[in-house]
Amino acid sequence: MIKISITDLSLKYSDGTESLNDISMDIPEKQIFVIFGPAGGGKSSLLRTINRLNDLSDVSHREGTVLVDGVDIYQPGYDVIQLRRRIGMVFARPVVLPFSIRENLTYGLVVSGVRNASLLEERVETSLRKAALWDEVKDRLSEPAIALSGGQQQRLCLARVLALEPEVILLDEPTSGLDPISTGKVEESLQDLKKEYTIILVPHSVQQAARTADQAAFMLQGELIEIADGELMFTNPKDQRTGDYIQGRFG
Image 1: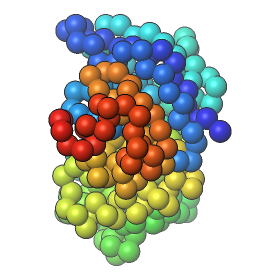
Image 2: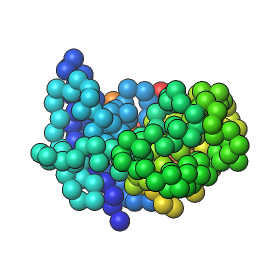
Image 3: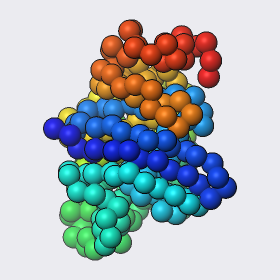
């Protein structure tokens, strides 16, 4: 089943930069959908368009449609706050709140009106388990989140998104600053998480894209070059430009 359908999406910023040019793609639910390509290709702009974070940017022109469960998220009156709860995002650089580990996870829930203490504790444990962090921090929940290592902070950011029980998780190079062991833990978590969530990942390398993708889309200079099954994309791409990038001839 298709979770997100994007049709003829184009995006320009106020400085005249064209970030996306006529992008159309269907993203299935409960898979890892990888969007990869060289820097400046529009990958992050596409992610930010899917949960309307680009509303906060200097976008001068946008056209096309983005449907989530068949509903146009850019229609007048659409609840953007609710959308960002349904579609959470984790960025390349972990940004923890200046609170304890526990409060990092409960903050969004409390702001949204959750007051039940047992429910809050349940969400803390569940989200940390899903982010493969529970065993490392279960005895440290009252300690400042900033005391965690970089890899742990990134998994805490993922857990913070999961605590809100989203339907879709957007990941923008979430392991770009992590060591191989932490990267492996995040990737392993994603394989479990896709059983419950739709995951859209911008990877930090072609190798990560190949390891994680159920389906993959290659973008170049704001254009969608091709979409294919993950294994097929990285063994037998249709477009010469895709093959050249995968083999390291540019980018």
